[in-house]
Length: 262
Ligand code: ATP
Ligand code: MG
Figure 1 (tube, protein in one colour):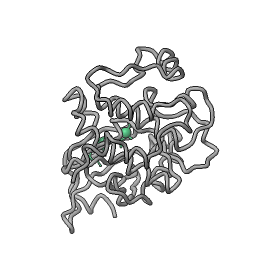
Figure 2 (cartoon, protein in one colour):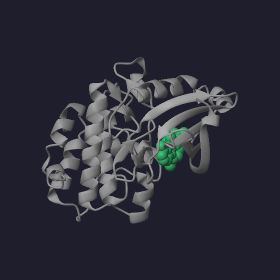
Figure 3 (tube, helix red, strand yellow):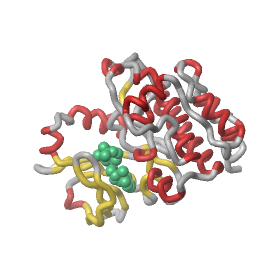
Figure 4 (cartoon, rainbow, N blue to C red):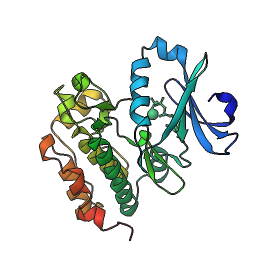
């Protein structure tokens, strides 16, 4: 494969190392997203290893709620990822546009997230960077987890490394302790809160203030939230990783069951 195999269309996103374009594979007519990463930038920032890990992990995952990595190639300038195309783009954009999501819609997204996360955890992969910017939506309103740049195979020597976005990191990472796949449960709780309210639960103007609130698990639930939604958020945002509601129980939770499609 090379760029010659594609009709490259408009730009649909911008990332750390380059741009993402919509494209059509010439012989099949298949629509994909091409993520073009500047090799020079990758080398400059010493990110080749991280990219290789991202590619290796994502290429081996097959799940309806995980963005498929269909292949990759490179020329002298770009390293190109061939990705499944998610027509509705970032969940983050939807959230900005609508302020907050209706409980039914949020519940369905959280259910899809729980399915996808339990699939990757079974494969001993933790994502570590769950947030609305890294979640894409396709035409059928299915969530596609994207951006495995921070994901790792458990157990790993990188377990104590700091990563991820501030608002979504769990207490054990704020404190620099070891962490495991249960960090994705915490992030799922933060995501659930943000989808339903439009803001992250520990959001503060400064990093230090955010850290403090995360370490103390200091958050308030607005009045408009239903009892079941509160209960799920509370059971995921537990300081002790072992006390967080396991994914199989998230899927059985009344707030998830209630809105499940027949
Ligand atoms: P960052 O590090 O800033 O998150 P990145 O290098 O990881 O950037 P991505 O997040 O993968 O890049 O892609 C950048 C943006 O391009 C996404 O936020 C999204 O808006 C768009 N995009 C990426 N992949 C796809 C896709 N498969 N379908 C539709 N849009 C996409
Ligand atoms: Mg990204």
